[in-house]
Image (cartoon, rainbow, N blue to C red; front, side):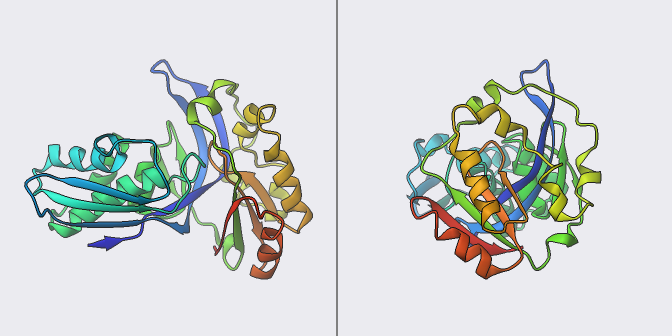
Length: 274
């Protein structure tokens, strides 16, 4: 069975508290977008489950890959047949785009379909939450307000994005999640994202923020420069996605997005409709 795990972007990301278990509470809006990996799962030729990865290089042995973690997590709940898994990585890693989380969740949903396990989205999301904070999003694969550690999801309508175009810029550097969190100062914004997102996109620039931009600003000044360049080319809103390093801009039309992309020849870029 062939599927295409997709990326996501974050619109706003507020770190609201530090938990006693070492994690952080946050509030963010996650939106699935069309940058995709390729995942194929077929019955195993041999006696073991295998994972073959191609495309973008990943510094991770196959047995520790998040796809294998997903297989093992589901196998603990319902014993599974052995399979051969083929993953082609296209979504950049350490970019805040959720590529690995999407691969894990699509592994769960694909196995559920392939073997007619009958698990509901809620049951799959519960398993996904044990693998990674972003993983449950990709079970539902629709815009969600995420709170808690990122696993409490509330559907949200974003009609204001319909007909807009998204340009994602992946600069030639990466940001680890640990590095992004290292200098974060938790805070409670005066106005929540659910209210701010209802305002016109043009106002988001002055009200919706990603707290990781503040913690990463000194180490990666390129983030601010890319955002400024996107605004200079007519972006309605620009932001770091997740903990970075990808930055995106939302545009009124595809021509504006394509024109803006021309100035980032040293970066990976992707344009998609919203």
